[in-house]
Image (cartoon, rainbow, N blue to C red):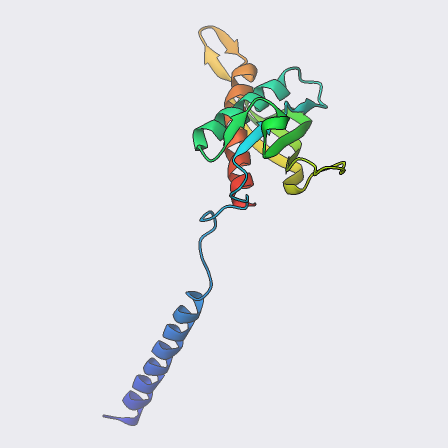
Length: 186
């Protein structure tokens, strides 16, 4: 074997050793997000306080509150109760902003796709202990931001604005994302 071939083999062996060391190190101490929960196990019964609406869009808080409640029931992690007195914790929030703006335009210059943006202040907290004014905040996000696109669909001769349908569909995905973030601590 020539000296060039010997150096190439040694270089290849060194490269292989370095690669194995890097692979070994990257496997240590890392895991996928979403495996656990951020919520203490003793919180089982929750009350969902109707969201407040600080926007000019009527009923958006009602649609979002219902979607969040449905999502929590679907996940089966909590029992949703009818009063704060029965609950181990309360989810409360306020819809701070609701915007609909065009995101894409057709060749005629008219919008054919819109983006809904919802910003909310959300808190998940235990009830206050005796003699205290506020409870322990388990999870919160003061600027919870959610965006969703929806198309303007052509129906028959004209166009039909799907805003109400889009709000309902968007609220379902908002609720899915919010509950996932709540449970996984994001």
